[in-house]
Image (cartoon, rainbow, N blue to C red; front, top):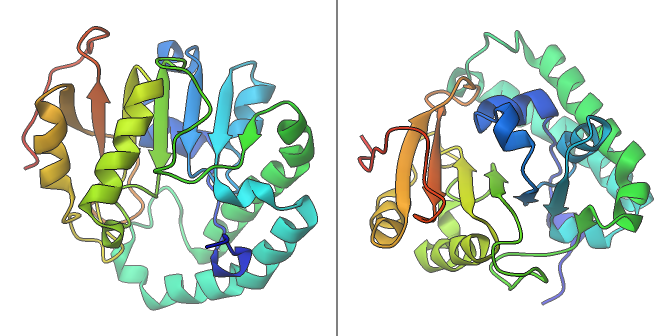
Length: 239
């Protein structure tokens, strides 16, 4: 089935949000990073400006800048209306209110659009949908990220998640996924089985991060190949 842009609601986050969601330190940023399901995030553009290396994957990158910009404009009010209807599910501290959120998100997506055509030419925006195999070699990347896609969309099913994370781990030395909630702001139903499955072969931890916008959404899943190890305590518990 062909991927349809009209089924997508684009919503992008910026570099500072990624840094806090994934506890990205300087040693992390200096690795070659690949980010899955990035959509119209400003992360890639801002990372590139700062001199870091990152590749973003998303099926929406098959579409033109004009088409993506139009879709962002078409869906913005819908997203903001949903946020107003569910304000209690969010923490309004770092982001004070919906007008400020709109400004932050639109700035991030405009940063993406301004960088998009150059980034595609440079191979930084690659059309791809998990769990399909990527065009990259084993362990080609030091770090793989998934922001607001895997685990959040529990309705995609456990097998989808296992296959997707396996492919991420094939090409990455380490994977980080944020958040660990579902779309109803509850702990994702697929999380326990994902932890159990990958703990058999990899080093797995659930770690609190400094970012919380979705209420109680302040933890990330970290999975690393044992040969590369971790520099922080390992916690396999999901509690």
